[in-house]
Amino acid sequence: MEQILLISGTSFLLTFLVFPVFIKFFKRRNFLDDPGGRKIHTARTPAMGGLPIFIGFCIAVLIWAPFNVLRDVKYVLSAVSIMFVIGFRDDLINLRAYQKLLGQIAAAMIIVSVCDIRFTSLYGFMGIEEIPIAVSYLISLFTIIVITNAYNLIDGIDGLSGSVGVITTLFFGIYFFLNGQTGFALITLSLCGALLAFLNYNWAPSKIFMGDTGSLFIGFFLSILTIKFIHYNHTHLGGEYIFDGSIGTAVAILILPLADTFRVFVKRVMRGKSPMHPDRTHVHHILLRLGCNHAQATGILVTVNVIFVMLALVLKDFGDIVVIPAVLVTVVALGAILDLIFRAAIEKRKEELRERNRASRDEGKVVSISKNAG
Image (tube, rainbow, N blue to C red):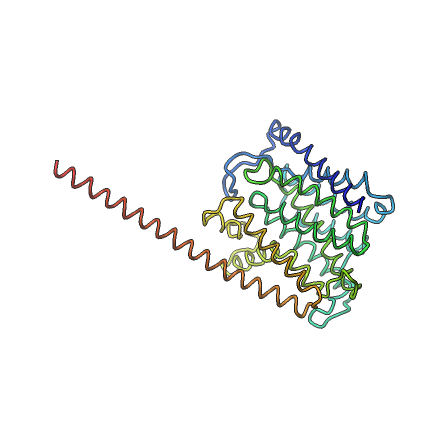
């Protein structure tokens, strides 16, 4: 426990202290993100917040992680570093989509082949257990790429990606600590500390954005934690701190980026567009259009994420045959409730606009009558 507190506290403190330096440096060097287009901020803002996050995270790990832990996680940190460089390069000079994808596949191959962090079965999902190694590699690579990019896509409003990152790393970090996976617990909670420091500067009004520098390497790291969690959890069923539903629990923890990305991709395909075509149809965009500010929209979505974490904890002793349907039903139920709220809000806005139009027309008539009488 002492190591956990030291590494997370050091990561928080270092990141918190270096952020003002980097914000000032980015402004002097004009490394700023311009408003306009699909971007919803209104002022030029630094957009490489992932750099101080990465620095604080890595220094804390190097200071406090024992040598045996560093030996066990060195290839994980190497792959995460590759993803960090890809995001940093993309923020400096835009990479093509296929270039980023190739970089993600290369980093993911280190995880599944060198680190051997991969799905070795479907863990009873749809009644399937063992799978061929080629299928294992493909499913693991696909999962890493999906989670990495899903997390990247929710980095659209102040505080959202950082808050989701804190919730997810806190859950996985505590889980690994309670189950004796000290190495993963230390590096996970180190990142949690760095993200908490980032939120101090990213909460509305934001002083700096995470950018691809942060969202790609953090999303990539979360995908590694997800695969590690599912595999370890399933192979140690019956333990005191083990969840009987491995896949369902992982989906519940990452529900916000996964559900939103799936919804957006389906809508784009149904409209005949490429699923990769950028637009403003994410849930956080909808909340902003309904009149929420950044803090309110982030608060609503973080609350939804916390509800699913609590659902996973409540269903800890139930298998995936119960957890997965429960998560899906909750997604549909919350979606239906939010849809009703959205529709009511839209109707209210329309009625307000109609009232304004009537008032302006009546005012115009009064002015016209006054002129005629004169």
